[in-house]
Image 1 (spheres, rainbow, N blue to C red):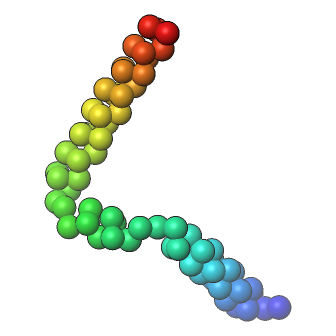
Image 2: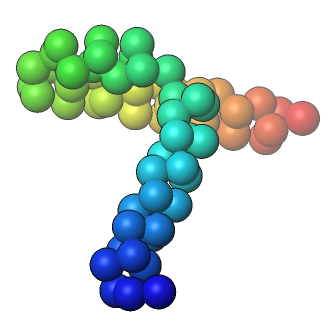
Length: 66
């Protein structure tokens, strides 16, 4: 097999892998996030981190009380 044929086969394999992953990705969420400005995305992520920290604190407090 020539180098060019090997490259075409490699690209074909990569495309197949991408197609397999795409079935598990909610593209509506991606589109929704891409409509936000970069600063809105940062704020959304910051809020997510704040919620995670609050939940972590609640779980740790609950574990100490048990």
